[in-house]
Image 1 (tube, rainbow, N blue to C red):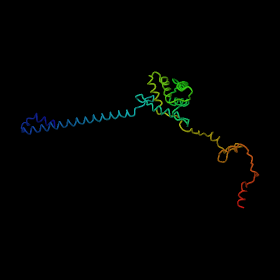
Image 2: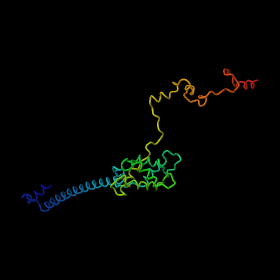
Image 3: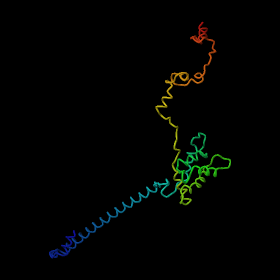
Image 4: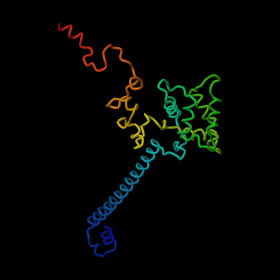
Amino acid sequence: MMSLLCWLVLSPSSLLLPASLYHSICVITVNKQGAAGRRRARGQRQEKDKTTKQANRFTEILTEHPPLTEAGSMADGTVSLAEVETAFQKFAVHGDTKATGKEMNGKNFAKICKDCHITDGKNVTTTDVDIVFSKVKAKSARVITFEQFNQALTELAPKRFKGKSKDEALQQLYGLLAGKEPANVGVTKVAKAAAVDRLTDTTKYTGSHKERFDDSGKGKGKAGREDIPDTSGYVAAYKGTGTYDEKVKDA
């Protein structure tokens, strides 16, 4: 298209064309070049819009699912208090079927500090945990509430994360607790070992120990440990015990 325009401008033979035809060819040529330019510009805008949409979507994903830091907290360093309270409730009821989850005893407080790595053996020891628990609980109480638990975390945070500000250390401590639960949830499984199986196999028992179990391996209780005298009035070898009443009824 550009070559045709150059020919119209520079070629002497183009001067032989009628003026109206010459003008029409020039207008068509310029319009086509303008349309091609507009298509290129439109394609560039669409590509830019596509890139912008991808960047915005990536930002939305990071906002909805922020990455975790090494301390376990969110990228912006904040963990909701509700997440901490959920962890508190899970540990508060551990090992106690009657617990409501609103109060935590000293044993479970030590456990949550251990399982969530608040106790590191260096900055925070088990002694520090016991001292803080005694400090925040009521004078005659043996348990702490969630508010007192949060107060205990405030005491332990500067010890656990030295060099951090008070608020930053507390947020990192919250990050250790978020989403955690007792490590040994459920019933402890019996260890399987050849030595244990051999010791608990009642079919291999001898002497008086053999008499303590029936053929299925179930214990007989007191009857297996003591000789209980027969006071029924029948001799030991008599096999018709309890049949007298049946015979009288039939007669």
